[in-house]
Length: 234
Image (cartoon, rainbow, N blue to C red):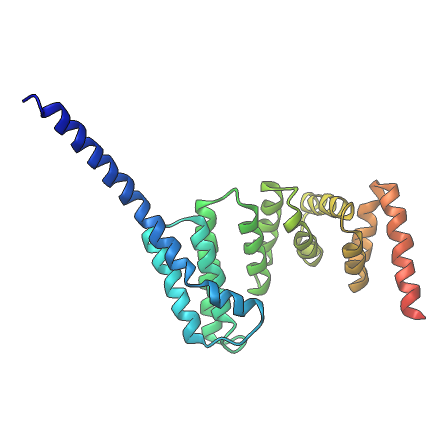
């Protein structure tokens, strides 16, 4: 009996160790499954052609990671692969529509688990735009991307581009949110905003009107926008 306390302590230590290992195994397996997708991502970044079969293999790896442990990040990864696979099919084909719809659903599942992640809301905006007929979804998702992380430098220029495109679909409150993003982004990326303004006349009007609340930025915009217009005519 004198050894009972030691046995209990040892058994407890083994039990705790097994519990820790059991919790870590799903994470390790999920990480390993996602790791196999890296070479393909590099080829995609370099815009090299990839056989659909290879993409489906990597998609299977992402699903394996999800089977070991669902998370917002893993559903977001699945959404990305689904949209990549969709591009391998002819435009407006049933197969492409199916994969794009799956991508939307995966992104929604991602947001159910990570509703405060602004980049996920922005991806849902993108999917709404390219999915056709989903502009209302895109508009709401864009606003939520900004509200969940208003000062994300890595996201703001895409938000402005999407906001300008969706402008006719936005209500006044949503437009004001975009105006504030325009003003903030102009403080560190004026040339990007000027380039956007040159693309579409409506974009120029929206950006110019947004900057009227910052006289110094407004004058800078007018001066440099006109300078670019003159240099193009020469």
